[in-house]
Amino acid sequence: MEYILTEKIDIAKLIADFEDDSAGAVVIFNGTVRKRSLGKEVSHLFYEAAEEMANKMMEEIIQEAKEKWDLSSVIAFHSIGEVAIGESAVFVLTSSPHRKEAYESNRYIIEKIKHELPLWKCEHFVDGEKKWGGNCSCQEITGDANVHIYDK
Amino acid sequence: MEYILTEKIDIAKLIADFEDDSAGAVVIFNGTVRKRSLGKEVSHLFYEAAEEMANKMMEEIIQEAKEKWDLSSVIAFHSIGEVAIGESAVFVLTSSPHRKEAYESNRYIIEKIKHELPLWKCEHFVDGEKKWGGNCSCQEITGDANVHIYDK
Amino acid sequence: MKIKSYAILKDYFPAEVQHSSCPKTIAELKEQLSQQNPSAKAILDLCRFAVDDAFVSLNHQLIGNEKISVIPPSSGG
Amino acid sequence: MKIKSYAILKDYFPAEVQHSSCPKTIAELKEQLSQQNPSAKAILDLCRFAVDDAFVSLNHQLIGNEKISVIPPSSGG
Image (cartoon, rainbow over all chains, first blue to last red; front, side, top):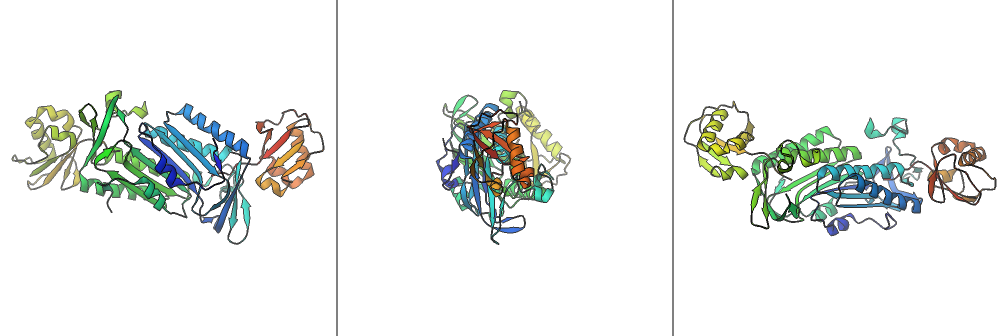
């Protein structure tokens, strides 16, 4: 199974094709490219990965989630290469008979992807600058690599 | 704005049409009709609402969420009338620059809908029986109307 | 006063009915409904009440021309 | 041994290079890289290391024919 994709993630198709009569609760996270970042206008994003390692780790993260929660299905993808404004960089779908499990597992997977997957974002700005994400860009605002903007 | 819909909720179309360059984090909850409930095979669900009240309350819940969290957009619908197996009964989309806000607000809206909206589910089973939801059906398993199966 | 019942309550009361007694409060109305159908008492204890589409407390005063909605516990989603 | 650098690390080291010194552990390799480019020390301190695509700790022993990946902090999503 390939979780790290060079082609565009087609969210609408993924969702239209998804069928699960036994679930009841389907939670989807779609991480898209924002048009502004760090106060500047973004041109596009470029993602690089240690592809084999990232793919293996995604498999492990999904397995872990399936062990921790009662899930009917899990779908997870991360794009690499160039991703345009508004497009999906990361997609996680979790379904369960219970909404609590669907929400918690979904967020768990996203946090693992963001903090552990050997995969890196490079922001390309309209002004021609580019900037590799380190941990995440939050430290530029919080001044601490371990404090994210949503923790403040 | 109508939040209580008699027509089918077209998830794939909602998502395909959704655009938000400023968000980054999009969380979607799709509550679908399960083919089994309380150990029995479900034929379909029927939802009834105190429609005007429910619509007004949805508006209020969305406003509350917008005040509590930094959200770029909120979409929420609940179906009434007959809803088939696998179809969407309730749909909530929240988007935000921050994933934590998108997740938390989404779950908040769903919990409010489930516990406070004047709207009721009637499960129709394949064996011909029907059963109105009271609080939720969890009490039949937990023995306590205030304890849900996902709390156990 | 007009009384609207929803969902499971319709197993105990008509969906919409003119209530002939004149309760002075919601609490009194609830008591009258319980007497009218004692098997509905347990579910009535879990219900919320609305007057003209706005939720009210049990001590809400009634005039007599209101539309009362008896709202059983939510089961959306 | 072959050393692969990713993302921001490529501002400090080649994407892929044959490392001629013979470090006995990952810790020693890390030290050698820091000496090779002192301005990379801060970022190297945040990196994880993998040998033949499996993460290892700093005291992992090296033979000399491994493929080492230097993994800067994740920034997916």
